Image 1 (cartoon, helix red, strand yellow):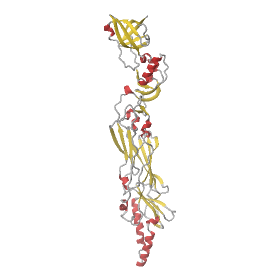
Image 2 (cartoon, one colour):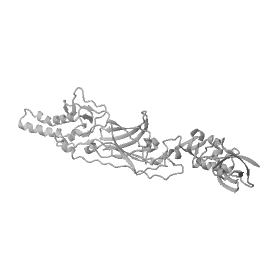
Image 3 (spheres, rainbow, N blue to C red):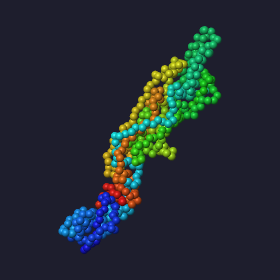
Image 4 (cartoon, helix red, strand yellow):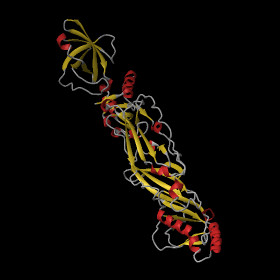
Length: 473
């Protein structure tokens, strides 16, 4: 039986659904060789050698074929071997099929980790300071006295500025001299002994601690009132009674630097591509979980303090561009932030505060964890973001000391670069159900049953193309 075929030249990718315009192609009458396959047939037609060498593609019976071979039998008689182009032949059916698309050059989800492009040894490091961190010096700060005194119960927490604390010391150590005015030498000795007994700070001062910042809500202005230490009163010192010993000491904020290549996907803002380290002594140096802040633009740091014990807690949470909290407990770290002062008459003498502080202990710090090794590629280059988790809550701190407050505080980000990408031919992670006709371009689909009117070998071949990568053009 004779058939009409159209032969032409068509340039396309093998794994593409592109179809040629065959309206102007040359037409030939041919016969099928006896015993040939109807899927990949062999044709015999009359054609000159000069013409047949120019053709690589064939259209016949509503299907598209690649020309695999040409054999000149004799003058102007040629046998052509064909292979069906299943992607072009079933383009419409493929395009309307609902598929789970793993990768796509037309659409992507930047939160999915793309392991087609591993991190390289090239890296950049960025340091960012906290935007509203308090300037802390020992000449500043605030003193909290745990005092046993008249009309205040067993103990009272007084908060004083450095100037008020210095005035209090002068008053405390000067009361004995004032009390002896006008007395004889014998009585002076008695008063001195009594005064030495009464004014031992260990008796009335349960503790004296220095804090780097004032407690929230503290106001030292207003009318002076008596501050009682034992039964003695000081009337010239501004102070604040701390009724709630656990309160916020201060809040800080920091703008998160992002991976310089993050336009390719938000996953690059997570480990192992991005490593964020907080340095905030005396709480230490620790890494934070990048998976929880991939969508954050700012970090908020709140320092809580216990005025009674001197302990503190550093809490960090992330915030996005709209001011929404993206993680409420990114880190929670405890440390001793109140610096305990020695309670002795000599230690509290005028001009001796600096010398006693210099003898206080050092701070310690530790770093958390290593970046886990990068897993190997999988066929689609898509990997779970769980591999980027480095731990969500840290627990590293130090003992209180002045030195810790003089060290820099901030965030250090290390970004590992990834190689240049080829989105047009590799796509990016998408992982959504769609139709190829809707997306277009390059894509990789997950293997799924196909409802296409094709033979079983053709279905297998189409499935192979869909799962290994194809172009819908």
